[in-house]
Image (cartoon, rainbow, N blue to C red; front, side, top):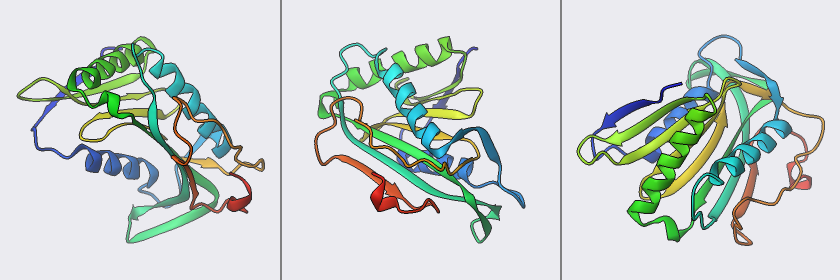
Length: 205
């Protein structure tokens, strides 16, 4: 599948764009939620880790991540945020890693973006590469697989790799297991937040 390249103004704020994209996926604009039946919340969080690990293996000289943040939120649906319902049996999941300061150098950030674009294209994912219209440098790269999982790499002031999914996933009967973060995240920089209807979040992670 050929990646799509999109040029954008230099002053566009990519973190805000990414947040809007994730929220758009999470909120279904109809009277019932869009359900992703391929995964439960436990399974999709594990799949995020697998795909992120596979992706960073393609980046030569990868020095590791600085933080990991995993979050479960409610499964909301409706025409807009002022008129929405919630499916209490389902949730949405996201994972974000930020890269260490070793990747604040522009060339390293751009090399990683190119590696991700190339690898995700080889996997047959739908890939969008957003580039600065003046410099041609990457602002972000997004890859989405057929099962609705997306990885979003942002090459802005904060360099990050996000994972999210389409629709809502079922809340599994099994607990969310503690897992070792990828890329030697320092102690104290690995966080999990449960804002969904999953029971006993404090006992799980």
